[in-house]
Image (cartoon, rainbow, N blue to C red):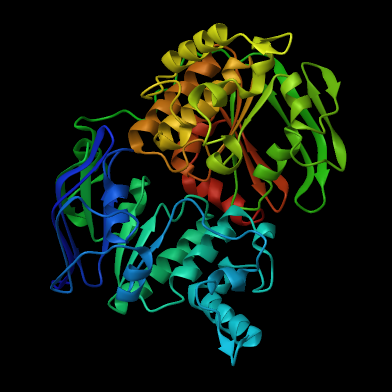
Length: 501
């Protein structure tokens, strides 16, 4: 553990108008798991991209296994045994799992691809990670996998070659509790083999579950490094934001009104089975379950992204037939997808275009856009939700994850939605942005918005929910009215085994 495998000294990196890294320091030991923490824009991801060859540093020095190096590309880093598992998936959806895993170097027999060998090697990687967490076949199309499974394909792809340093960028953001457990077992196996793990995460509980040390960055500067056994969550948050923070601030006087949404016997194959529940005015209704339990699948049926086979959806006591998102929007229902960049936003468009996308017709007259009114509307929403952006013309892909998520939510408020379905609303955003999203949700519910919150993070679902539904195998297996008295173990027992309690 005392052997330093990689050392960064005085690393700086600037982008137009932004000093992303300002002479930062970092040291990675052989066989350790080292967390990088900080708010969005702190510089941690930029440093990881320099280490893994995605960016080239402007100044400073990198020593790798005692020798000075200047990595110029990702392939060069992979030759040295340094690989990155990115937060945003880089998979070819129309190819199979095996083809994605070995895309850069197919096993060959002569001049032809050795399909048998490729499938065998893929199965071997599945066994190495843990077969219980991977319920798919090597010849299955990636497009048929859920988010958690796709994340695991990325991991298989990274460990398909010999690695010495493996960087994870938010690796558990879409994984179930079981899959996270499998990942942690794999990480421990890798460190026992002398592999060093660089672990970027916003989930501070993971820092103390799997990491040996934690380094904190703020505004492009290096703040410090601590052994995880010597600090706690509060200490790390204070290092990150410079102050203590109350993450969850519930309004004890909030009024919950009448039923606004009723769902009766909703069905779609074995993914959603006889799901029935209601949602009240001003309520935050939590939905918890492992990946594939039916919570996201139910949300997609509500918004018309998938077609229900049977069941009734009643909004404001009126029977509705929602078979397309346009119909959902007409009933004042908004949906924030767990896949923010893939489904929630058009990241190459600017702040104005993304914000008014659900209601741009409001600004059109005789085929012409009333630009001034549209800009004024977006300005008000940006101010209300405290979206930090250089300008309204800025491309959304250049904003931090937290600000992207604020736009994802604000656009539905702008469209005057009364029901908001938020699927993993804090996925991949930092602790400060999380607190802002929580305050945003509590404010919206206090003014009468009805919110369905889907989350894999038990602490936040227990803290934010007024009522909680637990899903398992496509069904609601338990409803909790008194959420405050629950423990994480109480909820997880039902999510994993409905007969356990």
